[in-house]
Image (cartoon, rainbow, N blue to C red; front, side):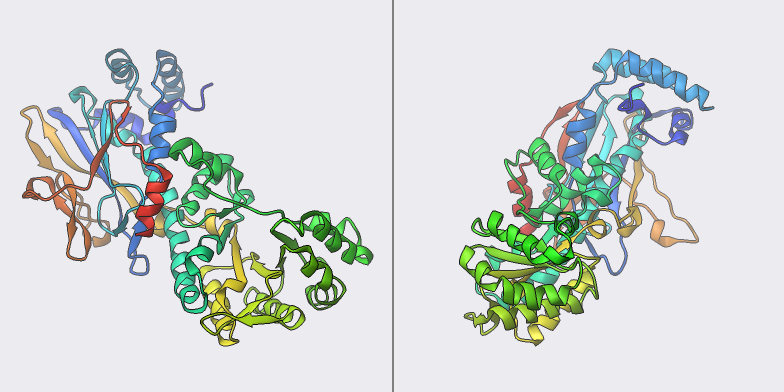
Amino acid sequence: MNLTNLILNTDSYKFSHYLQYPPETRAISSYVEARGHSDHPEVLFFGLQMFLKEYLSKPVTMADVDEAEGIVTAHGLPFNREGWTHIVRKHGGYLPLLIEALPEGRMVRRGVPVAQVVNTDPACYWLTSYIETAFLRAIWYPSTVASNSRKVKQIIQPILEKTCDDPAAVLPFRLHDFGARGTTSFEQAGIGGTAHLVNFMGTDTVSAVLYARRYYGADMAGFSIPASEHSTMTSWGQEREAEAYGNMIDKFGGKGLYAVVSDSYDINNAVAEIWGKQLKEKVQAAGGTLVVRPDSGDPVETPVQVVRQLAYAFGTHLNGKGYKVLDNSVRVIQGDGISPSDIGLILGRLEAFGFSAENIAFGMGAGLLQRVNRDTYSFAMKANARQDTAGAWHDVYKRPATMNLKASKAGRQAVVEGYVGLEAARVEQLAGRENLLQPVWRDGELLVDWSFEAVRARAAG
């Protein structure tokens, strides 16, 4: 069985849809947008290129057709053998589709299309909506993670700019991806982890740097540091806790940053007594920077308390903006169950105590890569136009009387620069304006290959 059979990468009800269109249909156009909510007015479009390279670049074969027919008919549904055989024989198995999309990394307001699909072969009018399942999934998940990661960046950035001398150098490493184990698969971790790296450069999700390299040409999109886990610390036993920490200094203390989880038994004792007294001179003499990681307790109060304890033990200096910065030998990372709102509260508390935001970094796991769904930004793919045998386009739309939020756009769509950002427009109403929905894929050929550098620059702008 071929689990990557593109014919089977859809929802069951799609198998019967080729029999349901008006007989004079020759083309169907569909678009993707984030309908959004009032508290999520913007999204960062990202991730389509991974799908194009990984899935649409592989042609369907007659073996795939045969396999799909057996499965679909056994599943209780009709199978479009004629249509798929046509694609294999006439198009070499590549889907006859034109895909237009915004440049990846663009911010877009809800209700503005991010992509549009139309079939290029009149015999394959049914294909546009057939790929909705895979196509929409390829957009909503990475775009949602990238958008949420950006929201955290928007929380951290202003406080960092207010309290740090060099915020541009510090910001890229303020949110670290701890989410790989909280996802459902290696692929999800890679896709979501890459989306996070659009905004930041810290990650422990190895698949993220692999995906960024494979699909966007990034030599190394993210970085990490040596760090302990509870098993490596508790294997020494509680009576040898100081030895366990000392070993971390010996192995990594002279090589830059290194993180040590310090709450295996008592975070207050670990910070105040072991780090702050027994090992203080060793930490400072090593020349690197110890990053203390509390991993339990109140997600807001505990990291603030750790910063204050380290300040008492190791001392601080005032930066150019008048805020306290811990001795260069120590910093803090908080990665236990925090939310974007928690991050804002922590930074606000530290600022109130006179500390710069550069003293602390954050890690997010499932909250970053897993605690999302298609409804987070209400992503949807809807048909917007149908072409008949005479070449005329007809509007296609829905207007549910009971829920206006689910109304869809009518007519072939374009995206233009407006007074308040990007706006949707009908293609026939462009009036000379540039359409920012660019062709990125046609009939098996990638037309635009975005680099990760370009995507990051666009997102930062």
